[in-house]
Image (tube, rainbow, N blue to C red):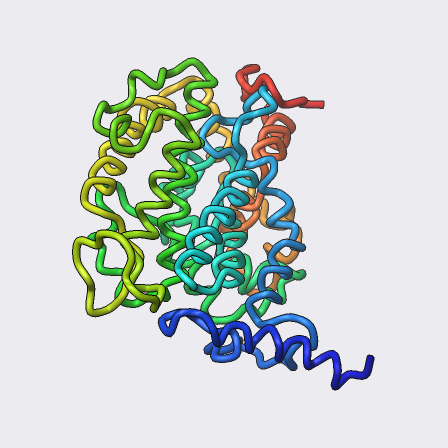
Length: 367
């Protein structure tokens, strides 16, 4: 096969994208990379981004980062890595049904949580309080792919993937009223909803596994509207998103659509939306906020505070690419700590201050 023949493979893949929705993103029409590169003979630009993210150290570390339950001893609790894979699966299902770009959704899904700290959102909140400019994991995810990975060179991803990574975070409440949808791609909108569908449902499963709630405890409207099993809830939510968002497909209308927007968007029916918001708020009140008040959570905060204080005072101990010429010690400390797994942060803190973890992390070896 000659080089010319190889390039025909990418051209064929790009030609397939011509059959996508007129509202979809197309790799051949990407807004490009900050540093221009020669195209791949075998892959589209979004496929290249997906592959680059998968092969990073930051992606590998997700397997030992908290989703909700800190350093759980059980084998079946969700980690940040399994969450990421579930988001990609749900996102691709929605994108395929709506005739959008699956490769773009998959790439941004794999990259969206790379910047999460050890100990999940609790670690994020702690770093946000310690670091004067503030800390947001979506911003950190973008910083990782732009500046920290590949020994400080970054991955040079396409604009569309970077936009999806940056815009995936959602406030508490009805985030579909944020107005952000008008400025981001449909694929980035898919990611925002796929992320919510994934974490809401696997967090319920983990809470049930931990004995913190029963299905009968969940809001009655959510159980009636979405179902009472993990599979039923996901199927109901994904089906509703596809039906309500059908104008984005560019295909003839199917099923009942409450309104036909002038600008297609990824959305939900009012009934499913209200049920999901109620279920999400219930999880905040019953699971997320109370878990932040446990002894494990208190120790996790102490670990992050200890590490931040130590590395800002001793930046020479921070390895490259996190700390180098011209880098502020507090910025480097944040980058290094945010990249740690739960296990690494716990072990490092124990070396600095033996006994700090008070034996509350049952699944972590301190040796």
